[in-house]
Amino acid sequence: MWKKLILLLMIGLLAGVLYAAKEKKHTVDAKGCIGCTLCVQSCPTKAITMQGKKAVIDPEKCVNCGLCVPKCPTKAIHPPKTEKKK
Image (cartoon, rainbow, N blue to C red; front, top):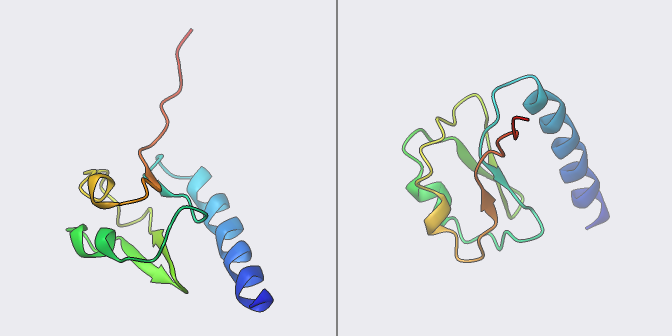
């Protein structure tokens, strides 16, 4: 179990680094994801896959359509945060 958790954290860290270099995309809160796969089924670009029992969004494939957001029963998918302009 710890090995899976460490692997997920490492994947998350790598994804975070790659994410920072790209346009902001939808994200999955791993703590809130229950692994139901409803978001995977709703994604038209196949950007969402399951890694372990958690959904992960590939920022290279995500087009920010938002179809996954209302499908999530735990509201674990969040749209990109916009930066407030001063």
